[in-house]
Length: 283
Ligand code: SF4
Ligand code: SF4
Image (cartoon, rainbow, N blue to C red; front, side):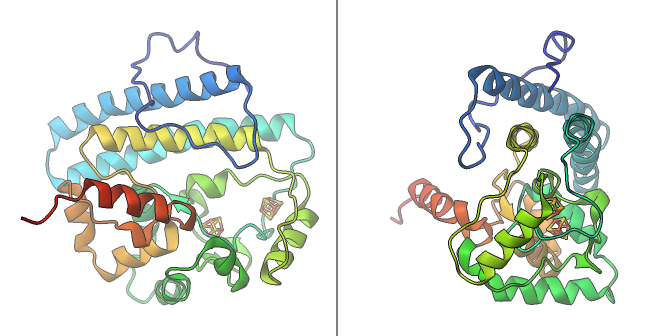
């Protein structure tokens, strides 16, 4: 990965320490890499909040704020992730990912709230069959742990004819799934469905970590805008938005509307414990 720190010295920076950058499981990070990723996340946050402040001042309506958030997600955050992906593609002749390969689309997907909103907007037509599929999956997966969700053997409801139907707007964590051997992905998926122990998959974990940095940068922008920045599980959050479009307006008003039941399985317990500790005791 190139290190753009020197060239970016004059860009707005806001440290990401209050959020942190999640580390892919099983990864030991070289200190230099950790520092670079946190710096890039801080640049994303700093640049994003400067851009957001100008845009919201020009249009302070909820619709304007939503447009600002989604524009930052697509142009700044997805743009930054694409740079990482381009570098992996250029440097990794072993990259096995290609259209029609989707063994990685049978698991929970963690996302920031604007990523879920973006997908829900894609499903805006009332007769879109993916709406019913998302709602059915959300009901089937509700409350399941990650292993239980994978054992259902059900793909993401947005997978249509073995391709992602929201590819241009797919969440960061879908973009971060990059592997060197599709057979490993298939075997791991089949083992998960059969309830067998996890099988190893050779993923490009350092690239995934850079994209987790982009995710942290997006969360930082939301936090600085006074918006709930918790991670959500994509299917649960999209289903919640489809079922209650007013939820987006309440989120834009600063309410914490995406509860622990919508968190990715790995974060659910952690989030529930945090919200309980923040609760004001009844008088
Ligand atoms: S991560 Fe694995 S399953 Fe997903 S597209 Fe790449 S090779 Fe295919
Ligand atoms: S959003 Fe697209 S890439 Fe992500 S899991 Fe669903 S179908 Fe796969």
